[in-house]
Image 1 (cartoon, rainbow, N blue to C red):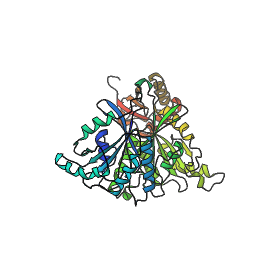
Image 2 (image 1 turned 180 degrees about the vertical axis):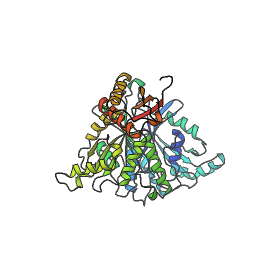
Image 3 (image 1 turned 90 degrees about the horizontal axis):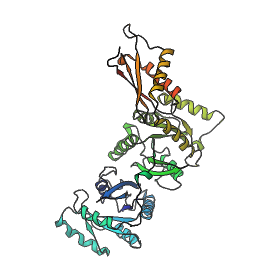
Length: 440
């Protein structure tokens, strides 16, 4: 286990800028609007060969609709952390909230570092004197934006890490299935993850857009590890007006780029919407495996044909995802929530599989014999050789004499034949046609 370092402080003091600087990423959303980060955000970092996990948290303040939830997240981050960093604002000076945080942290037995951010040079260190009135023994002047004081601060930080944390060797690391939970705002994505984890890991609110960052949570079931990636709700472009929400949508789409299987959550009580299908389309375009989840099933009025009707509507609107398994669930009651992992595991197994070249060529050969492609300018289209060139998703290349002449409907036919004979009925499949070289 790596040491865990939690960054806490009031909004807009530069916690996310510091997070991005140390982790060398742009994973935490940064904006001048206070309160941008609401959930905890985890990322591995290293300094001088020492690895640790950095946690960015929501701003500690009052007068915000999410105040109690943010306070809970901060207290939980502090409880989970080995070392705490209280970030203070060297330009804004001391606030009553800083005093509240110092009083909370003073009673901890864990190491606490007090960093005054936005100190851009030695001439600005005169601004530190007021902060000593908080009764602090050691204060670190830093500028997360300009790197001032960062290196000396990190040198001292890693010295405070517990010495008894064992290293995890590469041999012990297991293959983790990455699941991105995506969908429109307020369809229950964070509620589903909280239900699975059994804790309030993510903020949940009736107000759409509560989740802004893409948050990762590790979960193990039946000996298999899954990384659950909660994402911001993806609205229609016309409704994405605030700059910060646009960043959240971009981050949600990037989460699809790094996941294996997308859990596309929809609100069954509202029915399948065009935006649900658009989001599923994003996952399909990025080559993700997919599981379609109809959430809030507990509040849907039902008769003996209700589930069948919902699935038929879903299949009708998302014909391009005919391979994706679908499930009705309730994040509120936990109904069928654990079955999500069984389906995701089945999808991942096919998503990461490889089909032998000999077997693949026999499948293509039988498919062509059963249904020959149409002529191209009076000439027969010939399939010479096929092989799998990648997995995640399974991607095949087939060498033919006229690659551009293969009709999309015949391409779909070949994909369906591969699905049927290779047992790949739950994963996206890609097939590429290339010009045969040196064969007649």
